Image (cartoon, rainbow, N blue to C red; front, side):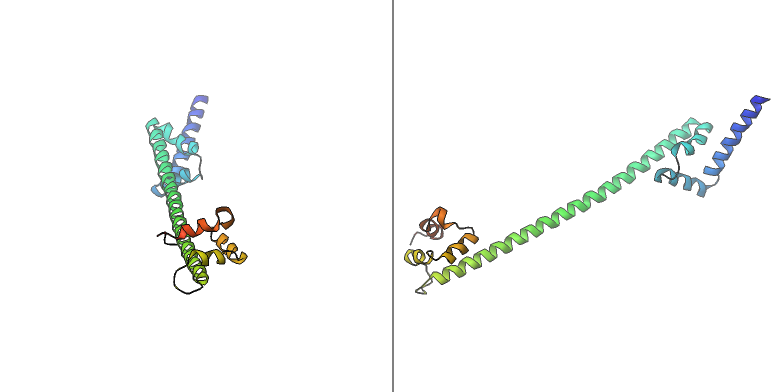
Length: 167
């Protein structure tokens, strides 16, 4: 009789587990959702199924694994896509800033050389350049443009811009 009581308690517990977790289709879907979202322990939800058949336990485990891997892949994909998009935006921004900086440098250099052309001939000769680079303000502006007159010397800088070697 004691064995029957234990058996009946086990049957009653199994019945309660099945009806509370899988008593209807909406209840089953709710239980499965709670299992993958952390609301219900997998052990609690799978024990009644395993009692009925171990195959149901395997099917339940496959469901959990499939659901988690799909969700993880989707979330990872979203993060990777956003990171790639942000990197592309950063590269485009840096390229545009570099192009703008080069344009400003060319305009500033052009302005400087026009001021150095004393006879307004449209050409800057070595004598004009040599006098012009003696001014400390000019040296500083050229240094800001990346041309270090002290390190390379005025003649080297002039030759750098004298691309046709006409002086």
